[in-house]
Length: 354
Image 1 (cartoon, helix red, strand yellow):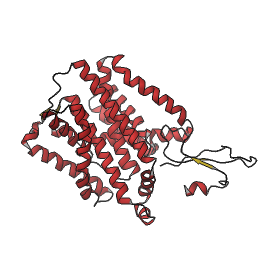
Image 2 (image 1 turned 60 degrees about the vertical axis):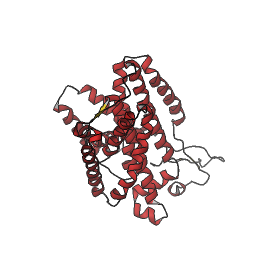
Image 3 (image 1 turned 90 degrees about the vertical axis):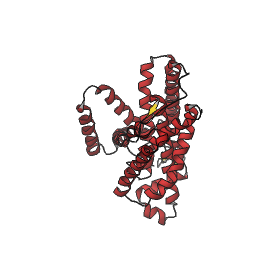
Image 4 (image 1 turned 90 degrees about the horizontal axis):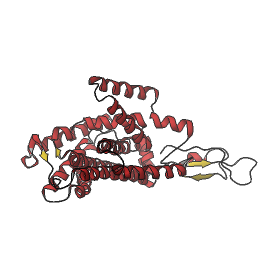
């Protein structure tokens, strides 16, 4: 904010949160969501099943972007909470609870377990933090494998879904994934527009300077870490409901973190829109290269490297540079008055990255 007001001619300027096109984008976004909600009545089940994967990718990528892009904490172990969420749904379903209702407890359980996990992870910094979170995720996997009640290495099947018609079940799974995706993106937007968002900006840039300026760095990091864990837990629950089973090696695989990182790097780290754009690109590549074998991984690697070199701000960063358009504006927008005007008139627009 101080940087904005230091701008020459800032006297009489108007600082606001909206950016160009944001009001129209809200209307368009609402129309898209209504269309997505109606898709089970309009398309074949195979289409909604494919879109389920897209929604899960958006959820986990948004959570990783919140953690790394805004909190400055690069984790390679968020699959720990994906696995916790999946096993929570399976365990509660065994007790007679609806798997769809168990999604709420999947998120809560992941957030609760993130508290002691953070006590260990936050003792590490930089690369050590990334490696440490990976090790912690492996510990979670090994613990689950050792518990016979959870099925051991072979995993467990999900109960409580056999009495639901296949078509209805597919629609419910689709709507659940869509709902969780909307909630996670909306929660990130709400969180980043408040005081926590301002604190995260300082923490991401320089946590030492932020602490010296009076920012409660530990609190901001814990909030982001717990929120990210909750979102990943809900995503894990969705995966269990869709697959009707859970297997530890698959659900705790580091492949999930690789997906998150690739999606955010391609879409644009540090932007709420980035994970959505990156997930769509990644999903499209999955569909196009599904039968290409090892070429699929080669193409993904080349794209990730090219994006990191020539588009470090990702695809959405390029859009902002050229148009200034934001779907989810979380920074500040400065309207400067013209020299001849007696009242503030928007002449230039500049929005800080959150």
